[in-house]
Length: 249
Ligand code: PEP
Image 1 (cartoon, rainbow, N blue to C red):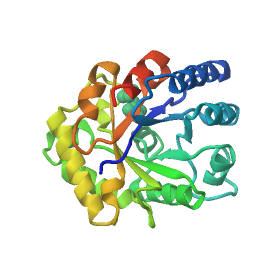
Image 2 (tube, rainbow, N blue to C red; image 1 turned 30 degrees about the vertical axis):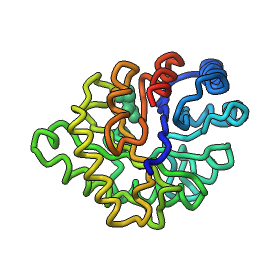
Image 3 (cartoon, helix red, strand yellow; image 1 turned 30 degrees about the horizontal axis):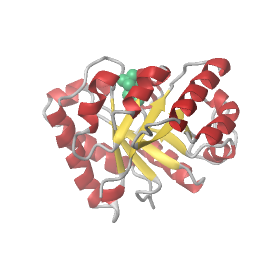
Image 4 (cartoon, protein in one colour; image 1 turned 180 degrees about the vertical axis):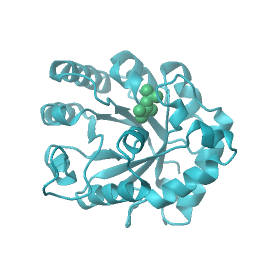
């Protein structure tokens, strides 16, 4: 059976406390109403808001995640945040290997794998992001490249309960462009097959699509085989848009 869908909002470096609280309150209000969406809903605010939003998320049934963590559990790493700190702040999930971390902070697959392992050790679900650049897509080798990226980024000891994979084509993030449903279907099938070679419960693992998901394209993307939810950037900052995406499940 396909896993229950997950809609995750990546707020990136946006929103101050009052704005974040208002968004979580609005989402919580929608979640407690009817009809209930056929998905779990996760918000991933900046580190500074996690402590303030944790009790609100708990009250309203929203899951809370962070956007990154360090690979070590503590130490002299000025400016970084460790996975146990995120769990302590009330997070259940953490995104690792987002393309903005890979490209702007030079994170390679080994770093992403180490971060994902730190997340699992802290009891968090790791959302491992992978995706090809436009040049890689144009080369005709996108599936091969993304599967290799995934296998090299996977934490040891992962299972469908502790790992989520997000396929996010780099060229689709924040651009308003998306792959065709056939391209998404082919990539997700390839990722599921590759996961099947390393995880006994790969069929139950959530494979998210991310990259310019909006209310207008969510239903079509979420209906694709092997798409078990979405990682949403820009549209997650608007209650109306994010909630419309949740309702598209
Ligand atoms: C993202 O950053 O994870 C993302 C998918 O962004 P957007 O939805 O804005 O393309």
